[in-house]
Image 1 (cartoon, one colour):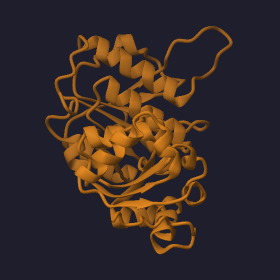
Image 2 (cartoon, rainbow, N blue to C red):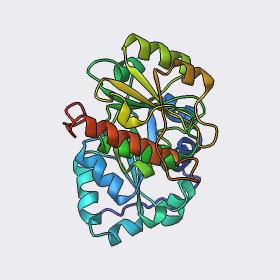
Image 3 (spheres, rainbow, N blue to C red):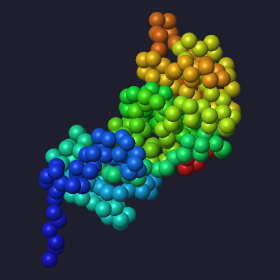
Image 4 (cartoon, rainbow, N blue to C red):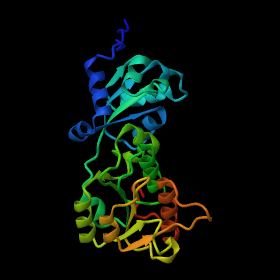
Length: 278
């Protein structure tokens, strides 16, 4: 006789309430070292990277996905506790994830600031006041694609492990170290590591092609509107502006990050020897 699988239909279920609390509470995510990732693609990425997973909530829409049955089999094979739920319950945790039919509770890696900035790291991004999690996630994705070794989120930035940032990064958090830190701690560690600090500054007097980005470098990116703080600008060794057509005053912060990352990769001959997984 086949045992009946109980499907959780109430948003007030204890496990569902805990997942919802993790979605809404950044300090709780940090304390419990747990973050949320939803969607078939992210689930496949997590399994491919063997990312440690605490739990999976699975809804009826997963069965409609082409990879759904195989994904469920692999979750069971990996020993991930699977909780069958309704689409309504999934949407009560994160609006919209019910359509994908799967939500994961993943273990947040312990990424130490000193380790991210230390040897053998050669290219790190630091985001100050980047408030939009979609921007931060997109920066993470481009950073991984173009050979960065890690990202540091400074004051005012979105949580790099918030679900919207994780979604925009398309699984980058499974492989690229990321940490949050104060500006004071970051500048102290960067100085100890003797990293070149290159600030993206629309008022900068240099362009990316005019400086040596092949040496160990931190690319500093600022708030979508206000840019970098004066403390960071004063600490920067170089301030670079990205040349733009007349009448254009600024770029989206992710576009600026991608431009700087590409020029850095070009100067390094598109060799990504230090990138995660290389």
